[in-house]
Image (tube, rainbow, N blue to C red; front, side, top):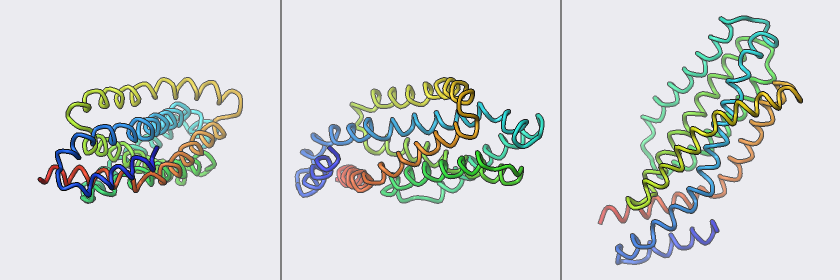
Length: 224
């Protein structure tokens, strides 16, 4: 499917009549969004919800701390999201939104694995800061792709799916955290979820050129 969509996008770019491009464009944009971006968004939010739900266990049992320790850990994650948002204000190349999304997911996954394996407080803080940074990169890049690729006719439907995928992932993540942590332990639960995110980002990297072509097609169409 991805190769077909890429070929369609490239062929449409060759047409001088851009109204024909607009006619075919919504189909080509919706499919990769629903088949890759939305599942990735759900996975990332689920894994982040798992890490947050298990945060008190890491603070008390693994890092041998208390409520203040958990507060510092959550603050580090929040500061990471703030830093990621500031970084993206300097990133003006929308053609690389797909690349930013994939790297953000991978960065978050690796950081959470480091957090799960860490037994040192400062390393846990740094890893959660990095995880928050990668997390917000994925969220903002995903929404940017949604705005760039979806036509006005389909924007309401895809936005609804995106919101459902985002909000529905948090309670699912809490459920998974409780179920798996009691079986395989808190650290292994976070590592398992993070590994799934990394695998998803690697698969998504194979579609980056498809998204770049679709974004270029949209920008070229709107410029006429």
